[in-house]
Image (cartoon, rainbow, N blue to C red; front, side, top):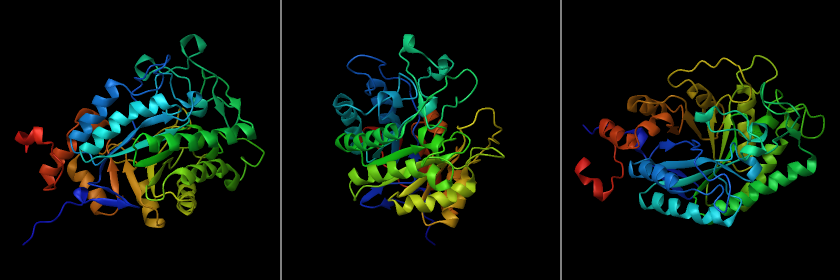
Length: 363
């Protein structure tokens, strides 16, 4: 009798890109770029070592952390950016190494909106002002994220179109930097998510009110990026499937509806997370707590999905993929703890994974 093949270690093809397995690394900010000077926002030795270790560990796809499409689009002054050619050149070093290890390099293009200009998490994460490299955040509406956060500047229609152009320019630079997949960040309470949710979007023009109006900005960004992103390369969208609010928030029903719209506009996979747009909400955190949202999108639409949320064990990840709840799993904290998680899981599940020749003793 032939042994069962691990679903987690089957290759996965989207457009003309084949990802060697379903163990993927989600974007996780490192808050380690220079906040000023000629190398502002550019990846450095820390980022090279951080991403390189996970590639050498067998991770099939690595999504580089939320990368600002403009200086004002960063979450913190220490975030990565991709608004100039210096940053592009620095990213090339990372993408070359990831490809050399058989890992597909991806990048998350982001604008933090009203949650921009904050300190590093280990420094408390509070908003910072001009005396600490900070700036004035922007948003769909002049509503602060939480107590102690500044009132953001409401974007004009011209300002919205400027941001759409910044996403397209960032996608062009991402391609030049060697990335094979781009992901648009529409989750966690950042700018696109702020437009989607009635909790944060109180506009009365064509970008607010109805579902069609609130999704307009997101779809314009998708269209602008898809227009410059090659047709043979996949485009992902990360979404918060729910705000975890009982009223006046983005819901799982909205997510299922929006998934069909995203597919029609050229998105190839929905990266399903939750939360981040409303402070003080109760989120029932536990193993795999966000997987049901991904599973629902996969069951009710034709859009492929990736699942995230306290996925830590090999058998747990295998079941998610084998049971068709998601096409791939994204391991965050677990890959921070163990860069070689994919290799260990392959050994446990009987799968195959790339091992560098230099590490042949570990096989």
